[in-house]
Image (tube, rainbow over all chains, first blue to last red; front, side):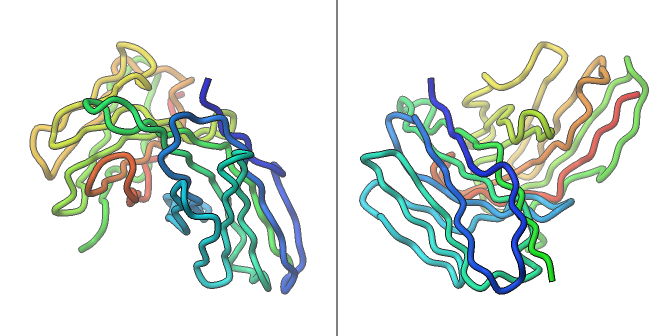
Length: 116
Length: 114
């Protein structure tokens, strides 16, 4: 069964500190992995996308890593800001047959709170 | 482009009533997704259209839920009859190229069934 597990479920950090969010998956056949940021009351917004051959991708202060062998990904946030407070969702795409395209598998997200 | 537009933003209805949620995808996108989000279950894909054709509706919870996409610029998600357990935020998203590409989400419709 395809699953995506995220940890921790929630996290509180001080402004300026770094943090790392984890995503472990059992999705096959793997297509890509995305990290989304969801602010309260808004829809998710894509931060990064990684395919099988990529192991690091950065978007400003956000750096995602992917280990396709161990099926693990992390999202590292550097020098956190109050605006980083949000839910971060890991989404892993599996390739389906040619008629159905892709199957999307969602983690339940990590809720991050950055405090002054 | 204004992005994906959903309406209404909030809906409160009584159990047993019909609810229709609406979505206008980003112009030029050929894939449209309906999602449901709750605290307990997170984001769940309900149905996925490609070129206005339903490709995967395995996430639609039961026959009370139906979705249509009559043209490339409009889709509806209907719940009839609604039940309190349907209370959630429903998101519509669109992309160019299917489920493997970046999806752009609307602001969501918060549905409360009392």
